[in-house]
Length: 407
Image 1 (cartoon, one colour):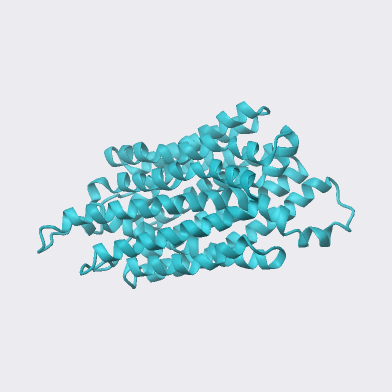
Image 2 (tube, one colour; image 1 turned 180 degrees about the vertical axis):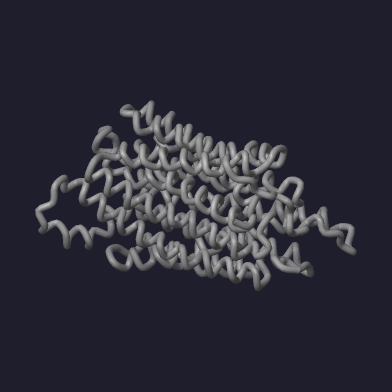
C-alpha cells in the first residue's frame, strides 16, 4: 500500500470516528431528557465539557503532533476515545455521563490537528484529499444519529458506545502496525517569496481567518446540538406515516424517525465535501470560501421559518454548503501556516471552532428560553452574515496575492 493511500485511509476512518462520537449525544437528547427527567436545555448542558475539551485541547495535541509525529497522536486518538466510550456506556447518572463524555472530548480533539496535518503534508492533491477525508467525517455524522436512534429503540443507548469503542481499539492496533512517511510534499508558507513581507502577511491573514473560524464554530455547534431534537419536534411527517403501525417502544420509534431524517440531511454533505475539495484545487480559495458561506445563508434562515418537508430541504441545502466549505477552509489554514507548526495551526483552528464553539450549548439554551427553538436558526443566520463580512475583510487585506492549492 503506497504512503498516500495509507494516510487517506487512516485519517478518513479517524475522521469518521471523531464525528460519530460528536453526533451520538445530540441524537439521544430526547430519550435522555425522558430518562433523566431533565428538560432539553439541561440535557444538552451535559455535553458541554465534551465539546469544550474537544476544542480547547486541540492546540496542545497539535503541538504534541509537531513535536513527535501525527501517526502517534492518531494511535492515541483511537485508543483514548475507545476508553471514553466504554466509560460512557457504564454511566447511569448525569454526573458520570458528563465526565465520561469529557474523556471522549479530550481524546477526540487530537484527531483534527494530527489528521489534517498529516494530509496537508503527505497528499499532493490536497484539496481533493481533504474532500475525501471530509466524506469520512460526514459518514460519521450520517450514521451516528440513525445508529444511536435505532440502537436506543432496539437495545438501549449503551450498545452504541460499546460497539464504537471496540471498533476504535481495532483501528488503533492496525495503525500501530503500519509506518507512515510524514515528509512534506508542499512548501506553502515556507516557499521563499520575492516580497520579504509575505511571511508576516501570512500571519496577518491567518489571524483574520481565526476570527472567521470562531464565528463559524459557534454556528456549527449550535446546529449540531439542536438538529436531531429540532427535527423530532418540527418535522414529524415521517413519524405520522409510521405511527399507524403497531411498533414496540413508540417513544423510541419517534426518536428513530427523527434521527433517520438527520442522517439523510448529513448525507447531502458528502456531495458538498467532494465539490468543495474539487474547487479547492482549481480556484482561489478565498473566493470559494465566501461563495459557499453566502450560499448557505438563506437556507439556515429558512430553517427557523419552515417545518416538515420544507425544513428537511432547507437543512439539506444548508449542510451541503456549510460542510462543502470545509476542504476550502482547511486548505486556507495550510496556505497560511509554515510546515514546522502545521499541526499546531490546525490545533489553533479547532480550539476556536470546537472550543469556543462549545459555548453554543449555553447560547442555544438561552435563546430557547428567551424566545424559541426556531429562533436559534434566525440568530445563526445573523452570525453567518457576520462571518461573510469577515471573509470579505480577508479578501481585501490579502488582495494582490495568490491563494491556490497549486502554485
